[in-house]
Image (cartoon, rainbow, N blue to C red; front, side):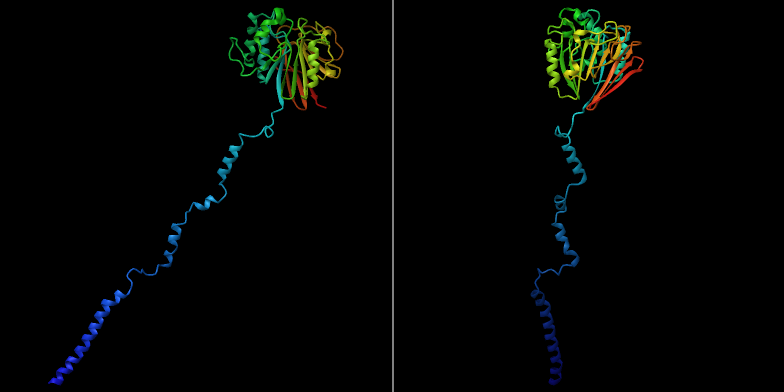
Length: 350
């Protein structure tokens, strides 16, 4: 009996130790494995922290600017070029009127013709204010038709120009008022305002007073003539244009005015413009061109004979001259109020 019990108890004891060993293994083995060590990360998760800490904008900071930025930079530079980079346009377009200041319908139509050309400025060959150059009539005879070219303009016919674009010369009718004071008061001109010079583009203009009442004289040995000679000699402009009232050469009623027959070509002038005779005439003398331009609206004169060098003569209708000049050439046209081109000549720089 005892042997039988011993046989039963022995396996039970062995199984008990197996259970005890299993229990100890289950309890103590996890304690031997570090609880804070995570399982190895998956390969696909490895780059995620790197991407998170690599700023995406940083590559653009080291790359060249995008095209819009380049355009903006260029635009910012354009408004501040040097004068050498931006040459001043060297061409002008101007009108010439003479013996016009009457307030007549003909003057109005000539003025409309001139303004249709959109000239840069207007010059005159005198007799701006018929009949006697008085202050009571000058605005009616000048400002009424040309106020938008005059600065400062203080008349009653509208707005003036922001800068003066009207450059008259004195005529004998302007001198009928003592000292030509209404003319001198009405216009603001360079120098002593009776004779002066100015430059526009490639042209240097010299404006003379040809009336015998000029305080500085009108003969070729006068103070005024000496002024012209010295200023012509000093000018570096490609073209030099002289203008005044009394025509040194003319086939019209008044004929040549000898006291204005100065050696213009010898002194360096390229073109001489005048009025006094109410005609249009082009005359070639001493290698340069002389023009009589007196059909601005007062009246029309007949021709009396033909003076030496006369190339073109016209007195059928009123009109004005349109002149365009650049560094190399000058084109002069006479156009009547019907917009018919009567004469054209082109002068080329040699």
